[in-house]
Image 1 (cartoon, rainbow, N blue to C red):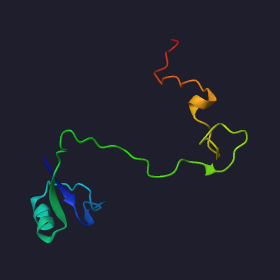
Image 2: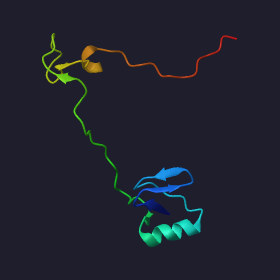
Image 3: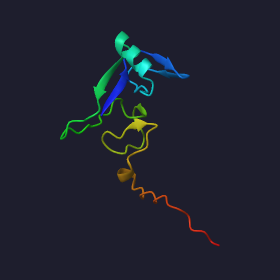
Length: 103
């Protein structure tokens, strides 16, 4: 299914759409005007099969680098960052479920 995508900032019905946002298509007059002046384009919404999107860490791990005492092992010396759960022997968190009523 094709979607109408904003190319420039558009204010309609008290909402500001930034470039890349999907625009409403319920008013054919607005859609025609946006397409005519280049403020929006039609883009297909299909993702090719077999192509998975993979996340990649964009920033460094949290914490300040430095020598921590006592050392937790290689690449674990970050000031303000606790060691991994496996290294410090932490138990897994319990599942968050619904509490049982005592009524």
